[in-house]
Image 1 (spheres, protein in one colour):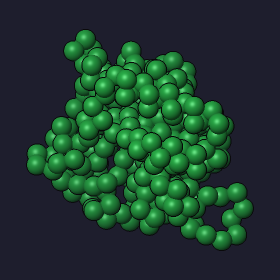
Image 2 (spheres, protein in one colour):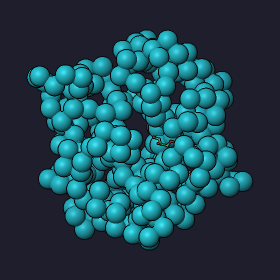
Image 3 (tube, rainbow, N blue to C red):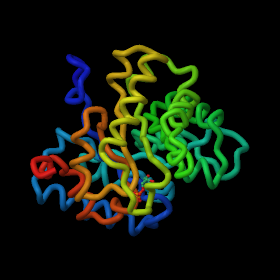
Length: 271
Ligand SMILES: O=C[C@H](O)COP(=O)(O)O
């Protein structure tokens, strides 16, 4: 990523697949092999787009072995991490362990963690800091539910989550940050926020980070959209100025579909 003009084209697109609690360690390897094979068969230019997968914790060792052994040009990350690095925290996974497995990224505050596990903004801020402490790039997820969208307070709601998640960060850390805007009403429902909705929120998040930190750092943050992304709608979303990538759930479980999302540039002309 260059920093010459701080515009969209200086931010490398990030196409991220969140497998959620799907794919055991055997299925995960098969999926990743199919994905790598499909991308190589299509002579995909890996230098233009960063591709990341977020498998379940139990898949990560196998993913590491495959990625390193076959020199795949893919990165991977955890779906969550503990705010602590070690100790008596039964069931938690340390960011240090994820880093040791070669993870580059970690999701923080996915809406399913917020709603099902009751994760608070304060906890998520500690998780963001734990990620940086362990040299992992956090993908901080934020977004509103349907009622908030219908009430028209979705921008305030989402910006509050971003503000709370980034408390205490340095400008240098913010330059590396990834924020995923995921309207909850669009996750797994087939409902997609329109490209303009994604742009509205991503522009608001970038402006807010500019106020909280500085404009140069905010211009480097990569902002993703997530919610029923498919090969058929990805190009229109990624044409928007402030949308730098996508966080894909269901469609990332199908290697051919996800590969088509990764190759979104070939759909740009027709979007
Ligand atoms: O992390 C991914 C998001 O929750 C989107 O999931 P989805 O693509 O299945 O709607």
